[in-house]
Amino acid sequence: MIFLGLVLAVAAIVTGAAVVLDNTEAVELTAFGDKVPGITSEWQVFMAGAVVAIVFMAGMTIATFGFKRAIGVRRELRELRDEHEVSMQTLELEKRQLQRELAQARRNAPLQSSS
View 1 (cartoon, rainbow, N blue to C red):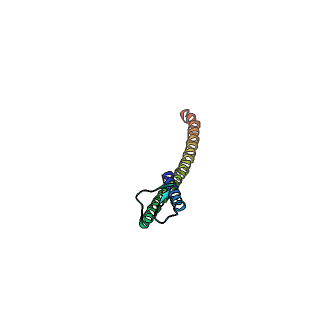
View 2 (cartoon, one colour):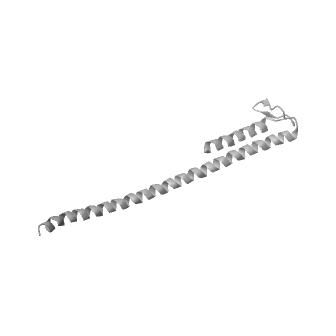
């Protein structure tokens, strides 16, 4: 999602730069060295610019949401890793305690059976 947003943003920037640099006449719109068909008046040039701006904003919005999502996933994974580590430490402590209790019970068992 981040990649798609950045691609759209870069495409909008490149298109906008091409339009600005290639246009020397008032009502002829060229992009990448070719005349854009169907655009013959100033308001159409303005609308083309508006479309480029909308595409740029859409790309940046998608990229922003992608970054936020990626950061949230990383945070959640880190929290789960920390929680898992705490659980493992707790289980290890319980295991050691049970091993000590079992060892003590085994030491005391022969004494009880000989009585």
